[in-house]
Amino acid sequence: MTAPTTIRSLSVEPLDIPLFAPFGISGGAQDVARSLLVTIELADGTLGYGEAAPFPAFNGETQASARAALELARPAVEGADVREWRPLSSTLRERIGTAGSARCAIETAILDALTKRAQMPLYAFFGGAGSSLETDMTITTGSVEQASTAALEILARGITAIKVKIGSGDLPLDLARLVAIHTVAPDSPLILDGNGGMSADEALELMGALSIQGIHPALLEQPVPGDDWAGMGQLARWGGAPLAADETASSAAHVLRIVYEQAAQVVNIKLMKAGVVEALDIAAICRAAQLRLMIGGMVESILAMTMSAHFAAGQGGFSFVDLDTPMFMAENPFEGGFRQTGARLDLRHITAGHGVRPR
View 1 (cartoon, rainbow, N blue to C red):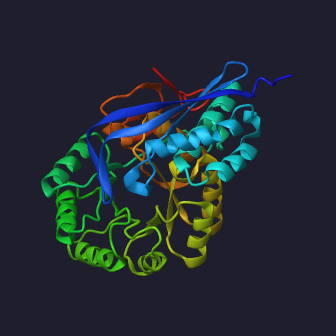
View 2 (tube, one colour):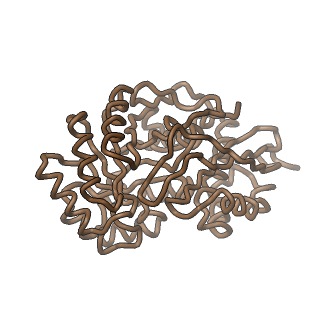
């Protein structure tokens, strides 16, 4: 007899959402979030939803490669039981281990369906430590004038913490943008995110120039390429601000190496990098090693961002929160999700699952 928690079907459809303006990082930009919506249906009719949000400029994943990975995983997913979510996650690692966004989408949908049946919000499933967070907002690549205007707009939203994309290849431009932002938002904590677009020497030069200007960033995030372990170690020792690993922290194994080599003080956990279940392992490693936690994402809709909010609020202890990309989207094809007031993301109204569904 088929259990009601058996996965009857998995479906995949494009989720293309235009942005108000291109979202630029050091590796490139995109003007449309080209994602995928994954739906699983259980034997009892319960639906679970997940989002795959690949960002080619971040790690080379594309909508097409994510869809191919999802199709490769389908035979292992259909007929499985959502109550066995950890063994199923292990199977996904074996089949599509490098396709983080596809793993994230399937695992999100599985846990959404499981907790819907249990009438439990996902923040409670993840630990119940809290039900709200306060996010920063990002200033993407661009001109000095655009940076200054964006900072004022962020403050007008009631958000104080500002994340700034650097690594343009033009250090004077990076410096001028940061000085302009600090001029209009002198009390805002600044997170500098290089997305691997700099060398360690360039990052140190920028940090030195900022110090002369009296600007002391709250966090320096992944200024060097993900595989530049020597550069990460150098910046962790001499960078002048806590160093966050993002591209370097793409798996639990890499985070273990970060701990061993003392290559960062903070780890940016993104569910899209390695899936939800491996992200739980990463968080556990960081807590054991006393590394500080950050939650972030790719260019994701309210669905994936709400899942990340549940993950971080439920576990608690996240020092940095970067769940801002729904604010960059010109359309919202979903209902529900976190409720945002200024910087505050509130989950308390959600009673089951992640609380997001297609319109």
